[in-house]
Length: 399
Image (tube, rainbow, N blue to C red; front, side):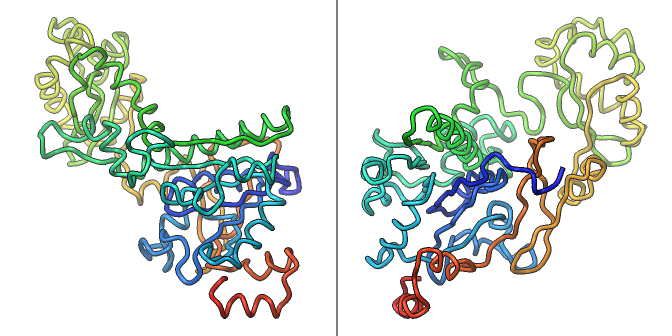
């Protein structure tokens, strides 16, 4: 297999009016599959995620993660002269993705209805916090706020009222980006059947609430919700972190009674404990988790992390190390499966993880993270703008 093998989205052009995470995460994955993604950015500043930090050789961590393999075009969409450029691109595009402020795209004449009249094959994907319609339609939305509105914070963190915790990554943005990505793929398939484009309306709130299905149904019809249990599972036990005698931590999980018996016999070296009425079922183990936790902690107190992991592996009990970011960068499984590649960037070569869904028929696209406006001149050349016109557009702040 070589990079010359066709990719699923080769020949597809995506125009993106994007910032932060949800839309860029969607379009980067489209680029992974071969799509040409033209990212339109504000002249001078660009996607505000470029300024979040400087942790990656002077570049922002969020931006490096979600923007490889794209072309950056600077264009001030508030200026009338930018319209011809944008519509020149849309005339040849397959997909428009946007996550501007609520209502901003429609005010610029970029609603699906307005665009479909001019470009009937164009697919439009609108990503917003709360979706079109309803009392929250125009409400600003950021990832943490959606984690709060979607109930995620109510079930995450420690048991105390001051121990609520957000996810350590942008989970609401990621959820919306994933549904936008799969929505675009399905819309492309639908266009193959109908010959016309369609609109995708992605709500961050609805995306995260879909992922909250288990706690929602657990609390169905007014039942108490899952208790916040820190890094442990709220309703299955033992399933979570336990300290070893050398100061390290081991994560382990049991799913059924067969595993519970093996855990008692081969890990705790206390086979009769499996028949203790307090721990005879998952419901009872969860109800008496404080007592069971103390038994496990006492048993592990004389063992190192490595010794605990050896016992767990010998008993075929699921387990994991509690890795920090350094541990993930150096993870032996990722190395053994050759999952890292090098991509170019304005700061030089950077490591990038291969997309998780490997396909034997093609290699994913793994191109550079773009500098702000890096592709502006080339794109305008394609659209027929002369050097003199481009100079005038730059002087007037259009590009």
